[in-house]
Structure formats: structure tokens, C-alpha cells
Length: 258
Image 1 (tube, rainbow, N blue to C red):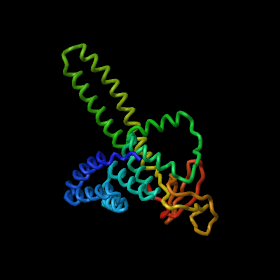
Image 2 (cartoon, rainbow, N blue to C red):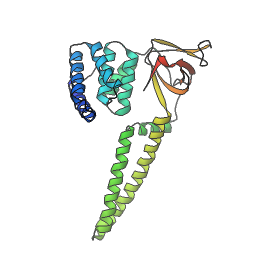
Image 3 (tube, rainbow, N blue to C red):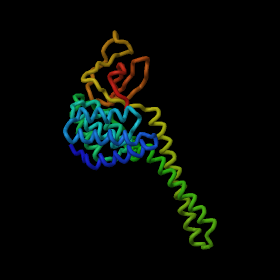
Image 4 (tube, one colour):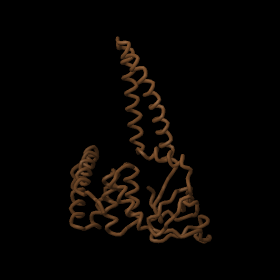
């Protein structure tokens, strides 16, 4: 696998240091990161995973942290946990080549080969646009376009050159259009992230039931690492849907939410 561990570890150290400094635990967090990196380089992947997981459980998050944790879990053959953390990293950085590469490699080892329902090409095009940036990326883009629009408005009203006013007017109209488009995509992305919840199967084998009852009939069998959509929750049961349209119920302990 292509890990680029030195680069990743340096970035993660910087991130954790900044996050932890605000919380008053800079020394402890950076020490843990260094310790985890040392364990990983010594091929003590179980110990490295425990430390990375401790940081995640303490509230730290970041593309590199999830990526490193996924790598450690992959090395210890915990495929479900590896894919779960790669997916979390991808959610923060959809265009990260290293994350995509390792996630694809891990997905190739999944037992289940679920064929997704065919999508109309316009829907696929729309999904690719939404996935181009994470939620934070669309937010920053909206702020940037809004700032550009304000600057163009100031230039238009305070410039004494008719040519500059004309150009700023055209640019302002274009910026307004892009701002409206980016804002619409941001709203859709926000609603999507809030309403749509995906999860990864963590158990080697899980039997989905036709209803939220252990005594109900079996719907289908699914294996570790498979990605599912969370449809509903009832007590300790979760209704899941596969990409091929199959629906069933699993105990919450069988999966991890991305």
C-alpha cells in the first residue's frame, strides 16, 4: 500500500498540536502521535492503532488521523475498521489520492460484491459535483465568492473609470451567479450529510433480519467491510439498505457509522 507515512505523520503532528493546544493538552497529544508513529514504523501496528483510536475517541479528527488509523487497522487485518476510517478520511478530503488508493485496495478484499442499481447519467454527474468538495470546502467557496462580490461592488461604486465600472459590473454578475450556485450546492450537501447516514459492517459475518427482532426471518447475509445506508433506528436495531436495493435489520453492534 502507498502510505507516505513520513509526510502523513508530519501533517498529523501539526494538526494535533494545534487542536490540542487550544484544549490545553498539546504535550500529551503530540507525545501520543509520536509514539503511534514510532510503533507503526516498528511494525507494531496493534499498538499504533490503539493510540490513534484513543485520539479519535478523545474527540480529535482529521484526514491524516483517520488515514493513519485505517492503515494500522488494515495491517492488523481488521478490514471493517480499516474501511470505516478510510471512509471517514474520504468524507473530509474527497480528492485525496492516498486515501482513495488505500480505500479501493481495502474494498477489493470485501467478500460481498454488491452490484448497485443503475443510475441515470445526470444523477451520477450531480453526485460527482457534490463529492468534489467536502462540506467545509463548499462553505469556504461560498465565503470566498461572497468576498469577491463585495470587492467588485466597492470597485464599481468607487471607481472613476467607466471601463473599470463596466468590467466590475460584468464580473459582479458572474460572481453573483457563481455564489448562488455554490450556495445551492452547499445547502444540498448539508442536507445530504444530515439526512443520509452510511455505515460499514464490522463483524466478519452479519445476518440481516426482515424485522427488528432476533426471532424474525433472515433477509440476507453480509460480510465485513461492506458499506450500507442507514434507513431507520429502533432501539438497538438499525435498518440498512444495500446499494442493490436490499433492505434488512441489524443489531447496532454489527456496524460503525461513517
